[in-house]
Length: 223
Image (cartoon, rainbow, N blue to C red; front, side, top):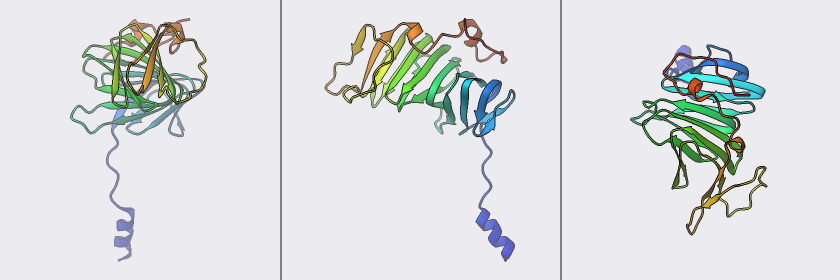
């Protein structure tokens, strides 16, 4: 019958989307192609972006995120037993705050950054270009991993990360200090300690951003 063929062509209805958080603040920000506003729901697979001068805050279970201007981020949820939330940062700067109960990691330039211990963590990640990152562990240590190699970033430290340093890379826009290179036959990345001001931008007020279990509040950068 005609109506039966039509139903078969349409296929099964999509599964219920998974909500990963709520937008608590939005300026010149978008969820996919739509303008984001306070109270918008962020679902698994949504592409979040900000324009020049834009800003977006998202609150989720045991997690807070801030997407700074000119940034692109996609949120996903893994199918593992721990049900990790994965933030895929394509460009720009992400500030995150995760509680001890949160399972969360960031993927940027094919590298992975995650909190190391079951304590509250606050971190800043900036994608400079496809081969360079800035990472600041504002609270709690972070683990950086790339192509099977890992390195700890201690609390309070900011690092410049160059991926695949044996290949010619774009010229650096900021100087290095106290460079630390991995002593292996094939160097997959180089971590260089830098000052916080040269890391990923001015840090947020820690006492305002490090408690993702509290109700949403607007957060402001220091001036």
